[in-house]
Structure formats: C-alpha cells, structure tokens
Amino acid sequence: MSTTSTTTTPVSILGLGLMGTALASALIKAGHPTTVWNRTAAKTGPLAALGATPADTAGGAIEASPLVIVCLTTNDNVRTLLAPETAALAGRTLVNLTNGTPSQARELASWAEAHGIAYIDGGIMAVPQMIATPGAYILYSGTDENAFETHRPTLQALADTKWVGKDPGAAALYDLSLLTGMYGMVMGVVQAYALIGTGGVPAREFAPLLREWVNAMTDGLVPGMAEALDSGQHLTDVSSLEINQAALPNFLAAYAEAGVSDELFKPLQGLLDRSITAGHSADGLSRLATLLKQS
Ligand code: FVH
Image (cartoon, rainbow, N blue to C red):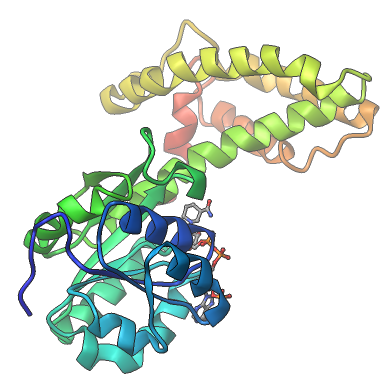
C-alpha cells in the first residue's frame, strides 16, 4: 500500500475513549481525513459532527487509511480486536497507543511482522486535555523506523514525537518508568494532604507550600540521582540512608497518631533497613535504586 508524508494523510482511529477521542479531534483539526470506530458506536457521534467518517466495523476503519491508530483499555483488547483483521492491516502502519508492558509490545510487533504489518508501539505522556498542546509528547519505538518517519508529520499533530529505538518494547519501558516517577510523586502528595488534613489545615492553604517543596526537591534530586547511578558514586553529603532510616519511624508514628494509614510508606522501612544491613549507611537515596534491582 502506498503511503504519503503530506500533512493530510488519511488516518483511522480505533477506540474512542477519553484519549482516542482527543487523538481523533486533533487529527480532524489538523486537516487529516479521519475515520473513526468504537465498540460502542454512539461515541463516534461528536467526532462525526467535527468531520470524521464513522466506520461500522473495525475492518472498515482499517481499510480507509494507510495509518491506523489503536487506543483501547488494554493490549488484550487490542489482540482480540485485531486478530481477525490481519488481511485488512497488511501493508499498513499500525500505531498502538494502548498502555502496556514491553513484552506485550514485542509480542504484538512479532505478530504484526508475521502478517506484513508495520508496527509502532507508543506511550502517551499526556492526559487527553493536553493532546495537541505544547508540553505533550508521545514516545514511539519499533523495528520499522522508516514507517515511523513516513508518518511522523501526521503523528506530530497529536503531540511532540520522541523516537526511543528499534526495540518495540522501548516505548513501553520509557512510558512505565516515567509513569512510575509520576505515581511515586502523586502518592507522596496524597499522603501529605491526608496528614495535614488531620491538623485541620485546608488543602488549598497547604498547596502552595507543598508545590514549592516538591518542585524544589525533584529539580535537584532527579539529575543528582542520575549522576550517582551512572557514576556508581552513592556516597552523599545531602542525606544519608542512615539518617533516613532513623527518621522514617517518626513518619509512621505520626501517621498512627493522626489516624492516617501507613500502607503507602510502610514498605520503605524494609528497604531502608536492608540498605543499612548491606553496609550502605553513608550512601544517599540513589543506592536504593540498585537494591531494588532483582537481577
Ligand atoms: N486517559 C489518560 O489520561 C491516559 C493518558 C495516557 C495513556 N492512557 C492510556 O490510553 C488508553 C485509553 O485510555 P482512555 O482514557 O481513552 O480510556 P477509556 O476512556 O476508558 O476508553 C477505553 C477505550 O477502549 C475501548 N475498549 C475497551 N475494551 C474493549 C474491547 N474489548 N474491544 C474494543 N474496544 C474496547 C472502549 O470502548 P467502549 O467501552 O467505549 O465501547 C474505549 O473506546 C489506555 O491504555 C490508557 O492506559 C490514557
């Protein structure tokens, strides 16, 4: 199938949840002939009003465009949906923006290759409201870099594009690692609001302090920890594991006194204890990343 790199490449979107709808809207606004399909057909209505062409079947949507984007809840859903559509997909480029693991992405890539489908896996670093706005980006990887380059101008309409390599699992690995950082931070913020709330402090009043503190900490910590990990120099003059191990019981005791669950933070105790037992008391928190690796 011939493809074009003009800015009006036809695109089909399978899956019109919150994210799929945002992706389709961005493509329509960028002038791409956009075909849409969703299991629950009613979700095509608002996009049809914007100019999209609804398809009755997933196969019909696939046949409408050289570039097919799928964004469903899980990769199990993707496999089930696309297994009967290999003939329609052959010769086209399939971009899978469904959240999943590196091994799921590699497995889908092998399946696609066996059927003559150019497969690109992607990880969306944005919420739906951020699509097609500055700051949003999507990670991509796959064995067929040419297919990605062919469609890069079109994909750029969704968000900035970041190619992370020919291993189909790379985009998922970057995606899950970045989301891990986010969830860790979010859980810290959740615990902080739960604790301060027990003192009758309104969350709105506390928010500016928390924001400033978290920003200041991550600004220095993220590059500083990278330096320590890549150099193997974990000794610190910032905050030792010994002092963190000594302080953690105060946090856990304060949660108990305030009637706040310690389920998010309790697991830190075991990890800090292990770091001291292993002789790393003078090291910084970067050492913990090495202790988390199990192979
Ligand atoms: N929303 C977000 O902030 C995040 C941002 C980062 C990327 N994620 C991932 O994007 C995938 C889709 O997420 P979503 O927010 O669009 O999710 P929903 O609004 O719940 O829509 C789910 C769509 O999947 C369709 N679907 C589910 N199961 C099946 C199936 N067995 N066969 C066909 N389609 C299926 C569902 O269809 P329907 O329920 O409307 O009929 C929706 O179109 C996801 O991987 C996030 O992790 C979003």
